[in-house]
Amino acid sequence: MAVDVILDQCEVALRILESDSKCSGETLLTELFSTKGYRWLKERELAMKQKFTDVDFSTFILSDDLRKQARRFRAVLDNLQKLSMESLANQAKEYLPSDAIIDAFVVPLIKPKRNSFVYPIEGKIVVFLSLNPDVTTSKLQNTIVHELHHVGLRTVYQGPNSVLDGVSDSRIKELLRFTQPLGEGYAMLAAAGGPDIHPNDHDPELKTLWNQRMASFDRDFHDIDRFLCDLLAEEYDQEEAMEKGFEMMGIQGPWYTVGWKTATVIEVVCGKSRLIQCIADPTQLFSTYNQATSVYNQNHGTSLPTWSLELVEAFNEEHRS
Ligand SMILES: [Zn+2]
Image (cartoon, rainbow, N blue to C red; front, side, top):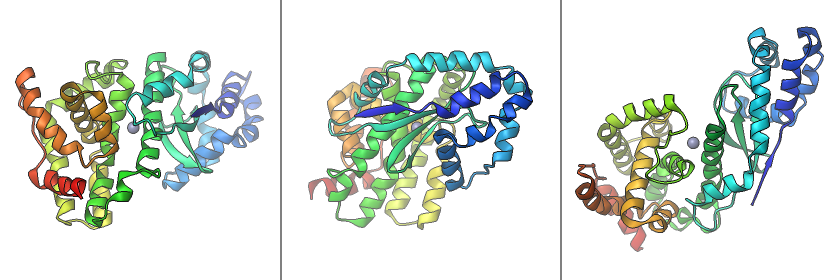
């Protein structure tokens, strides 16, 4: 397990922001464009068909508005450097099977889009971490654990012991592949540190959004359930399925809230090790959640929805075989 931090892009970017004048900043652009962080970001954005040019980036990094925030960026970077990547990776591993591997580069970046994500480059997973001048240390920690959980879960689903490899029915295999975005919810849970902690405790704005989203939980749950049932019935071609699945991502959309709720109900009723088994083998996730809801509803006075029987049965059959 190794998490290495690559600071070259944000260090040169900060030197540009801290330079005496725009002119002296300009002389550092060539150095900025040759940093690993910048080259990797460009490679990823272009691969994802995002507009990304050196000219646009120069305009962004040389803007007066950004220069005014140099001191705040520096403080954020200083705080980031004090974090122990090893302990953050261990926090992510709390919600992963023991054979999960967290081997990644974390690349903090000063960039126009304030989003963080993981993407494989040169055979290794890179966590692209957007550095914002107003980010708190707890938010940084939360984002890093969230992204490292994705890194680890990826090795579980793509590794040599992957449950997916053992699935013979190609329809079920495809269906399982499309349940993987529920991992957004597991990452939220891992980053929060437990089912009793609000997954956006560290961010008041996101906390409000999350609570609003949870108000339509039953509908979101139903949408994902319907989507998976339609996949099982082979209602979509590959492209339609990708599009439909992507629509439910949002900022922290249905995949996040439904994944989080499914995981927390299982953890609260059946314990963390049972949850980790279900994360590793999603053929067990749906029936385990359905069984757990009756106890959960009784203890919490809720009336949580359950997964359709056709899904549960399809997975049960696979699990038995
Ligand atoms: Zn995520």
